[in-house]
Image 1: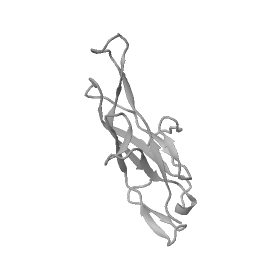
Image 2 (image 1 turned 60 degrees about the horizontal axis):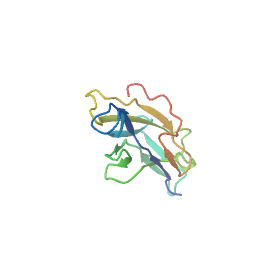
Image 3 (image 1 turned 180 degrees about the horizontal axis):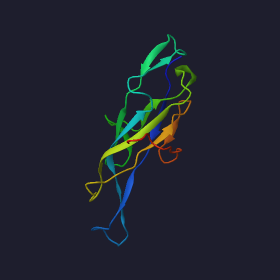
Image 4 (image 1 turned 90 degrees about the horizontal axis):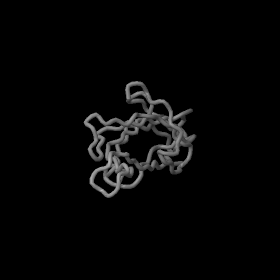
Length: 144
């Protein structure tokens, strides 16, 4: 067997004060920011994947991505969507949770202290695609 990955997609917008366009309705603008997907396992812990051939240890560091000027989730090098390790039977984990945190938030006239609250979600057990707007959000790890 081989490691299986799922794809995370998403779009991010902000409703802001109306500026110079026609009309008086608030503007809806794309948000740019950095987003980290942090596996909720102790730092440096090896996931022992006895279901793989050959069996092997797997490290799960933080995966950094970004919401670009189009408001869409991209990899750091620009690919659309982000692939993360799925929680298949091959990796011998009862549960795999990813914490999601945001930084470097920017949109039209964004305040210097703009904030997007962190959240968490449980990794699926198959190679699939999930959208951040449609998954069940869990309480993030303390301190995020």
